[in-house]
Amino acid sequence: MIVILKQNSSENQVGEFIRRMETLGLKTHLSRGENTTIIGLVGDTSMLEPEKLKSEEIVSDVKRVSEPYKKANRKFHTDDTIIDVRGRKIGGGYFQIIAGPCSVEDEEQMSAVSKSVKASGAGLLRGGAFKPRTSPYSFQGLENEGLELLLSAGRKEGLPVVTEIMDTADIGLFGDVDIIQVGARNMQNFRLLKILGQTDKPVLLKRGLSNTLEELLMSAEYIMAGGNEKVILCERGIRTFEPSTRNTLDISAVPMLKKMTHLPVIVDPSHACGISSLVLPLSKAAVAAGADGLMIEVHNNPPKALSDGAQSLTPQAFDALTNTIRPYIGLEGKRF
Image (cartoon, rainbow, N blue to C red):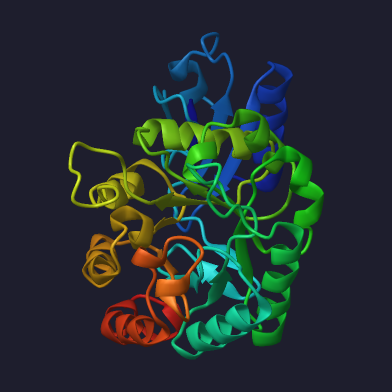
């Protein structure tokens, strides 16, 4: 249930109303927008009569919410959420590019790629230390060593780092990571999501290969319900009947999610297509659709990459991409 407050409501009145609602066993979520203040009521609201609530001095309107996701729901939080990662803002008109290799391979690779993507305008550095692979015989990542190489490269270039967590047991290793990524295969690993809900770090949550947008938002809800509301959603392509690309980028997911939720939405065109030549056109489509950022795989020598070389851009191709989209994302990542 959503309670919309009158603009002249005092802090004392709001606080008293919240306390009364919580004595009924309800959880409350206060959201202050530029023009509207909303209190979201989560729990069994069947005992509350909307008309009776409307008679309260500070209440302007009351609406019931049918969607099962509450904290992620735009109805509960009308303004876009902006997530600040060491000065890099994502959401609410702020656009960021996250770039780097699929897998961290060695110091030379990370040094070369981190320098090049920063020079081309990337605001954050990505790299896989723990790699979920379909085949048990494929490269699984350097794990702890890879994480140290990634963090070192990020520190040298002054770039916040993004990397994927695979297991709840590894949470202690991610203390210096700036954004923890949850991959498509773990989107419904609810135990992991609950653990991440207890942290104070931004979480980049990728949509599962065959999951609906509501299921994605319900996974975000697991994290937010634990107290961590710093969630970034990522559309990375879904599995369809079309075999010519690795996955099918659901570009309609971007404006639809913008309607459903206040959380930032970024796009990963690299995993969506699996073909490096398609990354630029899909990136342009993502920008046009209103995405808050891109996550792109860049490798200094794609033919020799230990994973996903076919979808990785060279530093030169990445530079061309950023130059192409820069006129449409504004100065310093702020959209016009």
